[in-house]
Image (tube, rainbow, N blue to C red; front, side, top):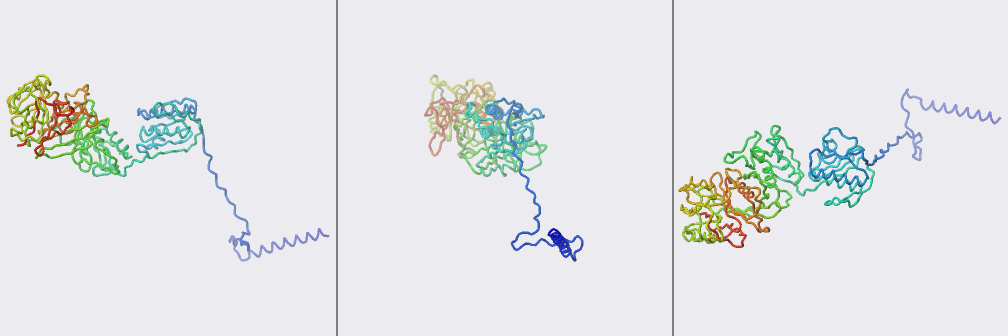
Length: 587
């Protein structure tokens, strides 16, 4: 009975449910959406919640270990610090992992299955990383289980990257001087995607070169075989982090340019026919920088001079380099001591007569001081000085006394230097030609500097004296013609003695340059070789130059305000008594 009762109740409930469903859809067209679910008084949704999709978890990091299957790869070009980085990685990884790693260059375009790229190789992975690095920047990246790149913006930065990689990844460090391990490291697991980058702070906010910021320039080379352009690019990259593009002349598309080996976009040269093919010039022209020369061997010397001129003499936040005034110099095929101008003071003594003092730094950072008088054609005359202003040989007195004696005889002397070598302590007679006021006092057999009766300055060999005999008003002897027709001459590379020097030079227009360099006083002035003097005189624009007596004899005096002032610092402590000298006399 009870079972039938429950069946009736269930039947009634089912019928009721169908009736309620029919009432709910009354008046709705087929396909019309139903009303949204209603919330209960408690705020929960009565209908079923929609299904949700769980987020995809990130992939597990890929870790792996190094083994002897990995090959260390460097560029085919042998760059010292990149090679050092390669060797460092080989030592460090062997110490950490206990196996040897083969080393190869990138000369083969076929990659190994597993490579560790060191520096700027031809592999796309390192090329991409290097393109974003300035000189001192470095990075290392574990690109995949097959490729690891360790590189820098320069070979030395690559070496820094190799040290950082070994220390950070496997704890290996070594003494930089002895290459002996300090910490042997351990066989660490590497993780794909690891990347560490160092960005260098150059301490310079801007760098202006001529009319433009240095980063706006393109180095335009007249010849793709010229060396030296890379030196310019490296310099600005090292100093400022600016990587200047280099392009051959026929690909130059305009814009601020550093023309290297020519003067403009047409490949022309500056008007400098009076000089020879070993000469270079640096100047601003039409908003560009011109580093002009005609001979390939000159390119390195020209680039070196330009780089020296574009080096701040002290720390500056926004250095600016101007080349409104032309610089010049010469390729010297002998070792020099790399004089770099640190400062110049200049004073006009009279119309066409300029006195200058140069402070250079040599390649050791030591000072070199020079004292220079430049005399334009017709601005003054030259005369031989002698002890007591007499026409007698065999006597000696220092240059201040010789100048004083000439002044007492009514000569308006404004400057004087020592001149010829002499038999010091013996006869005291000069070694070479000596002509005073047109009178031959000594003939000798050495090279000489003279002034003709027409006022023309001359530098000649002893053998050519007869050509000028009777036509010289002044002449003093020397040993060694340093420059002849704008080419170095008597500057044997075996003569590396640094000493005080006295030199006379002549520019193409007849301007005469007197120069004394102090020496044998390293903290004051470290002296010069004959090759140094040839380079120095060429930089002053001289086409010809002769070496006079130097050492303790080198003396430079200037007559100012009625006083005879010794401008240089004679290495003997006081001016040495000498056989003769060369004076500059105003009309």
